[in-house]
Length: 145
Image (cartoon, rainbow, N blue to C red; front, top):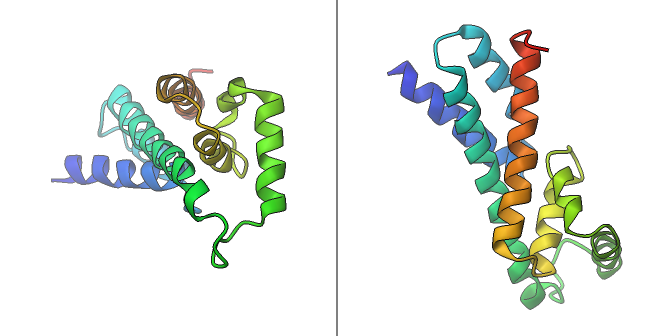
């Protein structure tokens, strides 16, 4: 039973961490890697898939923002949103390779959706970035680097 619960916990932590929720999945991944109870490739895959799906939720939310951003309850000011859009337009879609970076990565995926970044380009760049992050974390944890 622990096999499935470990994967499920890691998937949910990575999913939440990939979304706008203030969660982290790295500590759980490191713990599972050090426990040596699961194949490394499977842990890295589960974490990557969960994290990318969280980013896809941000992208989808961004695509819906234009319809609700002028409501009084909307939590981001027009100025802050315009500033983020300017950054993304200036940096371009390659900035999605920074989607793994704490603090800026999640809003970046949201802005990509707001600016109508094509799904496939978004998916490829975010998957590369997030998978590479977990691969490096795994390599460092297991002493491969």
